[in-house]
Length: 155
Image (tube, rainbow, N blue to C red; front, side):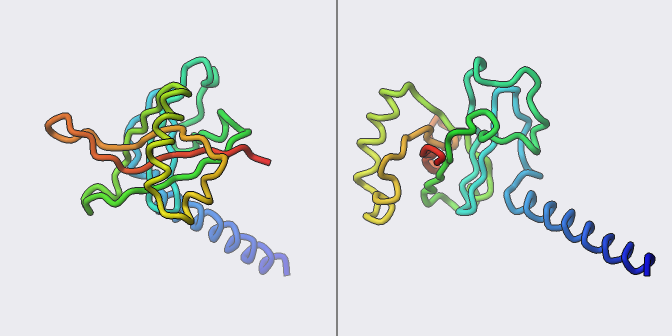
């Protein structure tokens, strides 16, 4: 009986480890570029993948390894929402760089961006704060926008 219990436990552990690995793969964490100590990856189920730079004053003394580093560890009172934009197929699985401005700049950008969105999305973003605009810098210093990251308070 002990032998069968051990086998069942082993199968359960292997299943959990396998599912965790598959989840990290789907989120793109195995193709994550090198990050500095104040950069945090965000990967959303809708396909948006972005690297957000956090001010050095907010980063922990010893940051976690990059594969397990999460922005929610730095700002535990915020929940993040990713709004992707249609991009060429060769950019969909790449990690984009997310740029954040000051609070005033972000609010001004939010006032320009949100009215252009579909009604249902605008309803979902009521009370949300624009945190960053994600995109790619292509050959001739042209920025291709990949998406927007909004945050809402965690209740």
